[in-house]
Length: 231
Image (cartoon, rainbow, N blue to C red; front, top):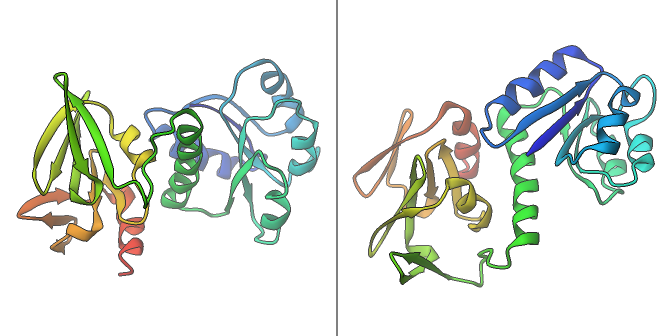
């Protein structure tokens, strides 16, 4: 995804640079301290996500969004919770981040946009009612119950699904699975793993165990994972 940052506070701008650089599918194509500086690129280039400070020196972030003829998806950054209600009045604003925000909260906002885009392009997004998924592996369709998926591991261009009834490896990406699995039970715990929380047997330090398989918990994902487990 092509990203633009409009943030007049340099420390906050650096935080966004750092967080975005951790995502392999996101690229910063412009970073600005004022809306006027960013105006040309937003009006002439195809931008996927705009990180926009709501309190800019030259214009209010909300007012600036209203001037854009074809705005990208927008994540608002602000120091004040009360701006949240105002920001969600515009359809193109997908989320807001209250400074200072963690990587986990940033990632949640980005994944929200990815999930919305995937739903718009692909009607096969799995939800609570759609309990089956079909995998096309070597010209054979395998029917898998979503609730049977214990974890998914990625390795380069391949993913491996470990299920209650077997293991399936084929060409795909962890990113594709992350946006289409139901959020109620599935969560990314490492750059290479998505797990089904219902199958976690134990957690020791930065390692969780699912049916005797040890799975690392990435530092950047741990807080969000423990929060989901209500620990």
